Image 1: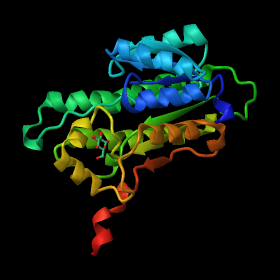
Image 2: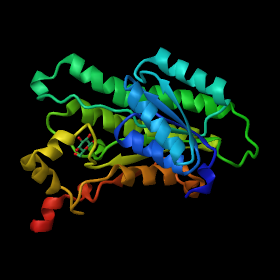
Image 3: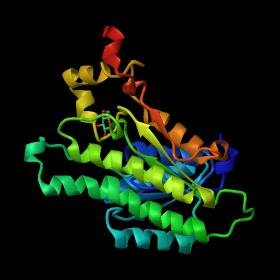
Image 4: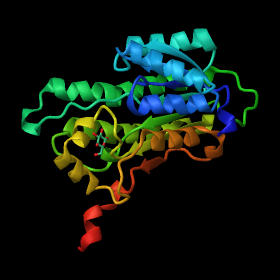
Length: 266
Ligand code: BGC
């Protein structure tokens, strides 16, 4: 438990399923007020809200397409109206739309860049504006923190995912740049880079024994990531215990970044 997250107002984008859902539940356990943003899975978002309440937190669902500036502005206006402030943004919503590079359409490119990169920019900008305006009891304390959910593919190239890798690498650099710019305001900005975590984005690969075996060979720790592994790291990074950390990425990937093949000779 992170005492500092109790009663904090936390927005999680794309929180109806997958990693976002687990992050919502984790903040629920911490006693936070969780804002569950979703695109079109209203029923799933409502189920998450009930689960957050059952964990001891409170929750509301707010629809909004984070790739659209008008939706993001409306989302933050609704937060301002209902809560008057925001303490944590978890920039989670993301998607993949894979294609051979030579067949990749501009629509495939834009779909992923718009959500995984531009969406993160829009939410981070609105969060920063809100953080900078909201009254602080103590000027030495952080007015708010952001955690971006990126991917090991911010660093690891991945054929057939040029759009996804470019978006994740872009989000990582966006995170570092705004961490530098916002640090004097005591706004912390960090990222969690998950490895192969079983979620709707890749569940098919885990269901097929051949592709599952290929994924497992890349994970020195010998198991797939659990959504709770990611949620625990997000909660800690958002908490006051991580107060002196900004501009960092924590890889939560069972060692996927460790060039696993080298374990068997160079
Ligand atoms: C992707 C997953 C993939 C994992 C490891 C994530 O960013 O969304 O589909 O399994 O990276 O490659």
